[in-house]
Amino acid sequence: MASLAGATPAGAATALLNVSYDVSREFYRDYNPAFAAYWERATGERLTINQSHGGSSRQAHSVADGLEADVVTMNQASDIDLLADPGHLVAPDWARRFPDNSAPTSSVSVILVRKGNPRQIRDWADLGRPGVSVLIPNPKTSGNGRYAYLAAWGAARKSGLAEPEIAAALGRIIANVPVFDGGGRAATTTFAQRQIGDALVTFESEVPLILGEFGDHFDVVYPAWTVLAENPVAVVDAVVARHGTARAAEAYLRYLWSDDGQEIAARHHLRPRNARILARYAGQFPAVRTFTVDDMFGGWKQAQRDHFADGARYDRIVAAGGRR
Image (cartoon, rainbow, N blue to C red; front, top):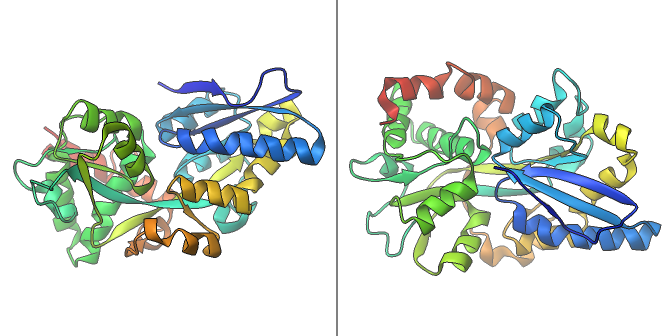
């Protein structure tokens, strides 16, 4: 269920709605007032910035179905592509409107385990061992879940496995998932609060939040290879045209690349694009071998067709017994 909360004082002359993915709440809780203060200094205009959060694909479909987002800030390009085609709520060239393919931050998929790692989980293949229980959000509704699946698939390919062997390895992992939650935050609750599962696949940026909320009862495992999770953003052109908010919406997203925006991202354990700021926070971002969805899967549109569309590889793995 998406949550909606105001971020700046009521009574402002202009309001923006940012529809975002499940585990970005805390980042935008800090970013929104920083941008609102900047905007008021620059223009004299006060802003109310509202947030909606949920599984990324569910959020994208909500916007497609009429949720009046001024901007979308997702964790994968395919959820923004959904809004660019065919209704063109978002411009088809959205990825070229801002630097870095319109992705101001990134993270990586990691494995969170119980303290001491009693199951001795070291890499993706270990999640498919008999008796291991792993929490992964539903890849059909969650960008977090899709990244987890693609991380394991790509790592298996990096290890030299052929496609039938990769599919079998993914089947073993999926069979070890006791419940597929709709988004990353729900999966975190199942793992950390309800104490279900031996491991949780999540974004690196989520780990400090889990430790802060639930205590130092977990260890993080960085696999030998993992996927770089890029977090793209876009203005919802059709909506801002109706609302008269195009100028504020574009500035809101562009400020994500400012030193202030990048610093806030780094403090929330999102990997900034600014090399100088990334170097300053190098201690919290271990060097890790990554591949991108573009490099490994031909981009998100191709990955969606090959793996997550109805009847594609993920569905076939599930149908073959990949889930109990």
